[in-house]
Image (tube, rainbow, N blue to C red; front, side, top):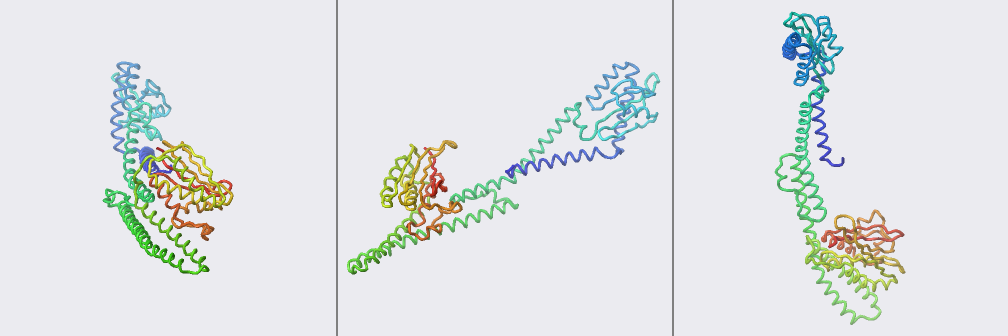
Length: 454
């Protein structure tokens, strides 16, 4: 019962059914008082049935009267019985309440009534053609159980029809209330996934109630977010482009200084060159991130052999790993996906280089590729595991944010720009995949890349 739709629907439907039952109960379970209108209409019917019963018994006998009573019960749900003047049962159903009422009924023209919680009894004297006096007693069901007597299957059908109609009306009402919420949720999920053009829908904006106001506010918020993020991305791209020119001039100036500077300033020049290269790498990654952020899907999609791609990336990373006295270990199954080869290469390489950067000396960086069997068609999962200091569990979701660094990495002894994993996540999202990190058993970090299989 976590669905708001079913909660509202069942509550509305239960309320309608309970209100109907309450009306039936309060109408039928009154004190022993019968309205004058009901008394009059019922009394006329009872008088007619009493006279007909007396004539049937005098002329045709007890068997004919029993058949008459059966037809009467089948058509009107009235259980009838006929007594003589002394209160002895002549025909019909035996009932202590009916027999007691028959014994107390005199020769009045008006019927005598007794009301109980579940039945109403009416008795009326009648005279047959032979001049003999009889007492006719009618037992009429009332209250909530009276409608479900076996003698009235049509009443049960009417109750079921009323319940189904009320359920259908409640369904339409709840659908009218919850459908905009579901569309808002879908638009919010698309917006959080990076689809900045997602909106709740113009037809819901035309509603003049509170939900329509909520939709208009949501769409206005989405427009503002799209405008802010677009301007932010454009600003990053513009700044990165503008920094390239002074950086190039700085490299030229550094080369000229090296030609004329004495040897004792070489260490300082080397430091300037390293920082220049770091700045150049940062600008390049910023431009890559800005370019990827503007894409709605991966361009130039082709079939990509992931096993071959990961093998090439692992071979390239082995040179960098050798400088740290660590090794690249692979376990690769045959998997393929559809996407852009260069973007996927960049995404996977970022994770592998990040693992090499943070793993400890004389350790291994494990790269595995396997076919997942869960879901429709499954997926291809790439897992890159290092043996480094790891990441606290509460920080695992943050390492894919641009420029985010945990405290131990802020010293920058290991290098890096803080953009590699952010680029990886965005590339994988463009390929309709997912990226997440887990704490590796025995220490270290495992980064998982799941891509749809071809």
